[in-house]
Length: 360
Length: 180
Image 1 (cartoon, rainbow over the protein chains, first blue to last red):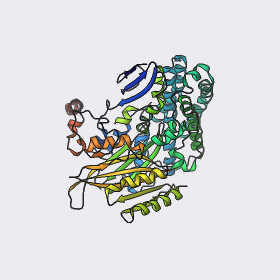
Image 2 (cartoon, rainbow over the protein chains, first blue to last red):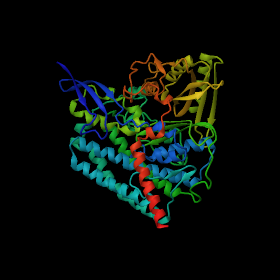
Image 3 (cartoon, each protein chain N blue to C red):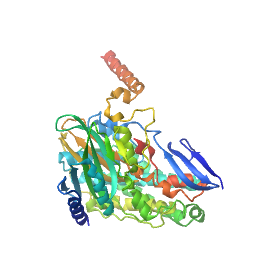
Image 4 (cartoon, chains in turn yellow, green):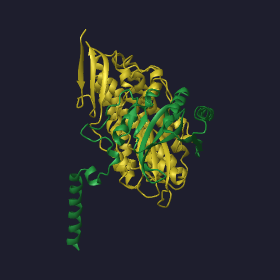
């Protein structure tokens, strides 16, 4: 059979952001893949080294929209490590709450996109409608539907009054039932299963070799959840169950994301129950001495790392971050071969790609 | 588990490199352990990669940066951030400005692939032995080693955006002046 190369992207109806794939096919079966990246490279690491450490807080939140909270969060943790700042306990819990709310919204978005790609548009609409509960919650508590501006150096910029806590509990309760129904559809609906089961296999040994992270790793039975492996903020005092799947396919990754939404709701409820009183932020503008630090957090897509070098001035000497999706692209070369052309967007979506994050 | 892997890493490093490195471990208030290691000879990075691979670790990312050496000459350093079962160990090497080469660890640790390609295009440090050393993000029309150069912020941010913003700011200021 002849081999052809099909170009997919950089602009493609099923891709949310630009990425260029050259897919080698034999008939309808994929046999190889080349990835060309760089269409939304904006030189953000360079920009971050030209701004001062306080301005960067705003810049980094605008790196991406779906996981926007994790960037300032992790960046602040790196700065706090260098300056030896201990943030108030209440702030640690509030940071976790903001992060888990973002995780719910981000995972629901990816799950909705899966339904859209397989042509199940009523399910897509339904999941997006459920996601609106989370969007409304963010708007009510933080004043914004995407960028929360929750973090600052030494704590958080928001607080939860008793009224807002009641509201948040009510919103989380509102999510639970529709979520259970959605999970049932993704796990048991025969059309969804037919399109997602056994598609885009990433065996566990390959997941380890490629160093994949987040739900992509956990869908292949690899647990490298930063919240458990290297706890930060209030996670050392919270019970975090890590859902692991062994299917290694598109379905397994989707189920992990859905289970993580349920787990995020549990985590927020624990936080609200245990939320200590006290200040939400240190009461001075800290000076950051010379030093270096590494900070990690578990973003919706997996492990995010910040490496920061300072020299005593307020301009960082080097600021480097690696987003979770960065590690997951190359693994597409394992997931794709053997699948059909029609599954290309589905498999790409299963790594929950964030290109503006990856390329910076 | 973390404690064992930390000891195992230190032991194997001593066996492979003798005294050709410095290593310290930090534990934060959550009990998370972070390692900081510096190699005296940049060529030893492949030995470290082999040890990380034997211990089942992976590359989280690699940071290259421009700095000064002890004689205040321009210099590159590369910090390799390895994951050893949740424990992050940063291994730093120096690359003299006139050398500009480093051995690729991608043949040993596949997880280094993209991040090595990125440091090559951003800092112009040549990778020796990388299986796919082509550009990652930057177009061929952009010079290799762009991060070594000084690019004015206004250029980096695209002048048009900045100009529009300042026009708005000036307009707002002049209106305030009129009101007074």
